[in-house]
Each structure stands twice: as structure tokens, then as C-alpha cells.
Length: 511
Image (tube, rainbow, N blue to C red):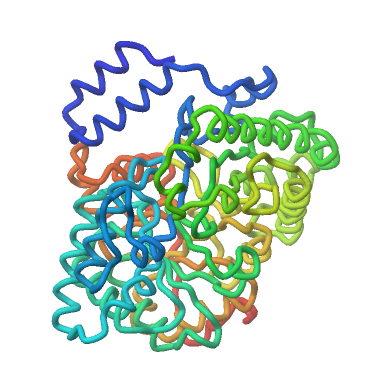
């Protein structure tokens, strides 16, 4: 429960910027209220962190993630903001900054900037490369300075174009934390030249992620985007909430044994997770009236029927290892066929359960939540994000990809694995292109890699700069505080580094 001491601590703490302090005070005020009502069993599971509300706050008054249809407002203008339709590139860039400033999310900043190359392409006819560079550079700097939060995200379309090429050039020059970027990769439409440009950009600044566009469209339709870290949702919609279940803690709460886990323990805690989600969704829609009060809804940039919720899991690796020990079977997740098969049995069971559990106001997925492999928060100590292999125990590249790829098709709203490459990747960039294409052919939904030697550390799905961590406790990006916790407690900077050679072209290759 929030106390006056908590409030005073925020007011007097010199590490906060003004906006960070305002945000922290707002959350403390929200948490003076009672949370949405649930049964005692659910409340106890939340208190014990077997299930987790991601600390979204006691009174949901805005969706966790929302993805406005920015194209509509550029084409039609906005009566609320009193801006006419954009006529040229200057209009489009200025209007987008105005719109972002009025777009809420759980972070207080927009988590989605739009698919920026697609949004801006209609406005660059007749714009020289020199002008495109200068205008886009000012816009790109503005994004980082106005929205200093690494969860703010843009997507790039599968077809190489002038805008995406310029964005990669600016990324390599400016080396900014914001925006996070995902590149949608189509096996036919996306050229090797495009992926190669993106790979070389990762070498410098850790961006972009790579998305399996075919898989995403199959699950979410044509109009989807990745936001925040790896959270894939429908444009014009979003996610009311993200509630997750700690699979490690779930196993520890059971009475022991694999069959007991599947027959009793796991279904019990899945049901409590769903109950917590329901309570938060109903409060958002029926009590705080977000969808009746937001100009984004009244002007058609958001549609309640395109929203769903995210049913997250984490701690799969530890859950598998504990169950293996209870059964007296040798092997650990990522290093044993038996353990990996058990892990897939767990995720398949959960996927089937979630697909049958109706949820309120989730018409964006036909009345059901989206399953999500949650990529962790800074408070996760001794438990691994999502379905990942524990940090520092990752096997060689091909074995690593084979272990995790089998889970990806189950998680419509996102799943992630972060690979750390050494300088052999820089010497063999085309080999990285081949690895990405091979990974997608083998069923991966999202491919992300770090280069061990640059200034950026990929935390859960967002980036922090090592140079910013050195400035702590002061930090301009609020997300740097979260990253510092993950580096200190979860050692995300100590992932096993992998070599990349021209022979390693796909997960289906021999390791």
C-alpha cells in the first residue's frame, strides 16, 4: 500500500527527471485505490507472484499497449487536435510528433510510432535525398529527446525503399536508444540487400529486430505491428493488459511430478491468471471508460473490436528443470531432448488452454487472449524470460535455434530470443543474413541479435547504452533504470557469445 513516505521519497529523490517524477507520483496515487476485485485465491497468487500483473497499477485507465492507425490521421486530419490532412513531408513529420504527444500507454509514452517508412513514402515525391536526410534527421532526434523511453517502437515494411534506407543511415550515425525498430521480412519481397543493410546497422546500434512477416500475417492479418519489445498486435487496436504466469513458481507450488502438474497445478494457476486479466479488462472498459472518452477512438484511430489481451508466460526453463529433477530424469532445458520435449509439451498445453478460454472485450482475437512469451522485467531474479534458455548456459548457435524455434508458432502476440554474436559476424554479414532466413524457414517468429562489442545491450527486448549505465543513477531514458537492474541482477550482459561463419546458414544445418 502506498504511504506518505513513498510519495516523499519520489519527491526528494534527485535521480528523477521532472517527467520521471511526475510519472512515479501518478502511479503512487493510482495505487492508493483498491485493485479490481478478484477471488482470494487469485489475490494470494498475485501476492506470491505466481501470477503477475506487470505492476500496471491498481486502476487501469489506459490500455497497456495501443497502436493508433496513424495513416488515417495523416490522410483525414484531426478535429480534436485541430490539424488538417498532411500535404507534404514537413506536415507529416510535424503532425506525427503532435499525435505521439497525445498517445497514452502503460509507460506514459507511445509504444508505437507507426510503420514509419510506409507512412512517409506518400510524402517524399520530389524530395531530394539531401532534404530527406536533413528533415528525417531532425525528426529522428526529436523522437529520442521527446520520448526518452526504449519501449517506443517503429516498424519497417518488407520492401526496401528510400525512407527505410535513410533510417538505417541515421541509426548508424546517431546511435540513439529511441526508437526501437523491427523489420518485417518476407521471403520473396525482402531483398538480401535490405537485410544486409539492417544487419550492418545492428552491428552499430543493436537495431533492428527481424520479424517473420508471413507468420505474423497468418496470425494477425495484414495490418499488424510489433510494439514495445516484441509485442505483436493489430494496428488500430492493441492489448488491454498483459498478465503473466511464472511457470517456475507454478511448479514449486504444486505437489510434485509431471502428471500432477498437467492435471491439477497448471490448470489451476492458468485459471487464476485469466481471472486477473478479466478483472483488469472489465475495469478498463466499464469503469474507467477509456473507449468512451479517448479522441483516438472517436476519430477512428483505435477500435475496441481490434483489441485483445496478452496472456504471458515466463520461467519455462526453470519449470522444466525442476520437473525433470522431480522425475529423476537427467537433462536441462536447451541441452536435452527429453527436457526440450517437456518444455514444448508445457507450451502446447498452455496454448490449447488459452485458445479455449473466452475473455471479455477481446474481439481483436475472436474473443480470446493472445498467448505471449513474456520477455522479462528487472525484478525477475533466478527465473528466465519467456521460453528462453537461461543466460550463460546457451548452447552453440544452431542447437540454440533448434531448441527455441519450435515454440514460436504458438505465440501470436510475440516471442523472443536474444542471440549475442562476436566479431566473426562483422566479418561475415552475409552469413548473418543466411542465418536469419534459415531461422524463419525453421519457424522462428522473431530474430534478434546483439553484437558483443558495440555500446548497446539488448535487455529483454529494449536497448540500453553501456555509456548510459555508466552515468547511473542519473539517466535521461527512464528505461535505463530498468536496464541497470537487469544487468545487475539477471546478468543480461553475460549471454554466451556465438561465432558466425559462412557454414552456419540455417537452424536445419548440422551443429
